[in-house]
Amino acid sequence: MLTLLVNLAVLVFIAIMAVFIIRQRRLRESGKSGISPIPFTARLSDLWRWDGTVDRGTYALIGLVGFALKHNLDRLATSWVFDRPWGLFNYWIPPSEILQEEPLFLSFMLILSLPFIWVGVVLTLRRLRDVKLPSALVIVFFLPLVNLAFFLLLSVLPSRQEEVFPEKTGSLKPFFDKVIPRDPWGSAAFSLLIITLVGVAATGLAVLIFGEYGWSLFVGLPFCLGLGSVLIHSYHAHRDYLSCFIVATLATVLLSLALVAVAIEGVLCVLMAAPIAWVLAILGASIGYLIQRRPLNQLDVPPVMLSLLLFLPSVMALESLSPGDPVQVAVHTSISIQASPEQVWENLISFPRLEEPKEWLFRLGVSYPILATIEGEGVGAVRRCLFSTGTFVEPIEVWEEFRLLRFSVSEQAPPLQELSPYGEISAPHLDGYFHPERAQFTLTPLPQGGTHLEGISWYRNDIWPASYWRWWSDWMVHKIHLRVFEHIKRLAEEAPTGL
Image (cartoon, rainbow, N blue to C red; front, side, top):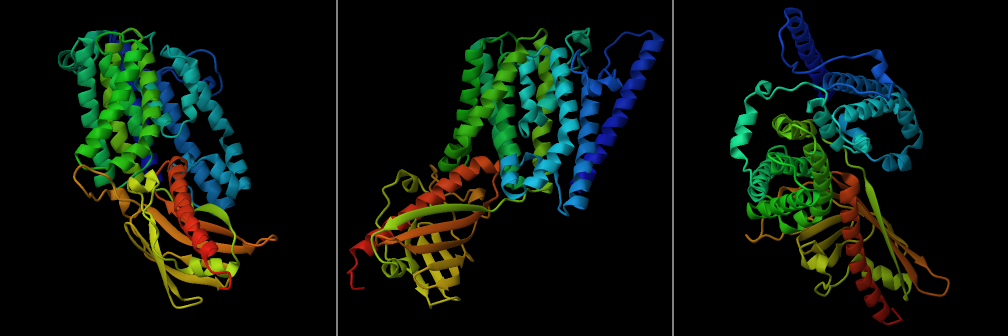
């Protein structure tokens, strides 16, 4: 379905381009002056030459047609050769994750991508040269999702060689002239106000309407807010990099506070998202700073802002139509205990109440284990582990006494309790986005006596980008393991040796 929509969108764009090109030729034939809305001078050599420049119409058309061609080629190749599906958002899976599971598949896809990568890089280099932006920004071509916003940006910005007439630029510029203050403090305050409102609306759209904690929310939104805040702040005059940096940073902080204030998110989620959001906002602000240094920056801002406002909801809608398939992740934790496997086993299958946690992670609201009980013995028994947010129900799948215990998770509690000035809030990410699937514990006797206890928990996390959020969830699961293991260690080592 999503592939069909992409192909239809490309066909519509080609049709629009054809209309503009015909209009441009008729204007030339009639001798009338004016600006072509989308300049177009495509040549076959544009596909491999890195020197010279390329106009925005050619860049947009080749980029969209090339992407549609590549996606259909990848989809057919993966279906025929590897008998597996391939969606638009598979391009954003880090190669390192695919390499661990399917090195042959990754090699095949990289070889298939090389011609398209070359065309994309040379076109982006030539387009950057055309709009008088640093060639080093070509690195953005390789950043997931940000590269889509960057492609849109380069497709909108006019060439610096174009003859531009302010009276031909449409009705948005006079509006921007009136509403954006000229004073630097006023423009900064106005920028922060607009960006915060847009950020809250975009977050609400992604979370409450589309139900997606995806790339558009945690990557696209911060980048666009950083870029947009600087373009508004510098609309009337060039601003130095420090002021652009401060405005983008304040935009990130104010949006975080606003999300907590309107109870869309809690403090803990906002704190975890803050590092990636701030880095991407600064990246967007840096590109905005380079754009505002160009001549006629005022003519660039209205179309860029309009494009960004259309970009975010579009990507959010696409993500909701084709949600990513989260990869199963395993977290390993081990500890050595000076007690026999029999003593460790008795305290592993069930354990009494733990002390109140001292770790700040659990005090902030992350769910932590309190006690565990078991009903029955052997395969088919049910272990119940009480956490601070509820109970995990864990049917036993493997029971090798004193050696191996494995169970699945049939019911789970929320992964954390959000901090909020309104008390307990039910943030959408607390329900159905973190999926613990099973766990196992292995007991191995040590040569010098004692027991080596290793635990593995498998889970899936339906929040993107997976590599970033995996760092947080792996850390939390590891801390939960350690809390239980330290408790078992203490109980087993203090138990009578005759047990």
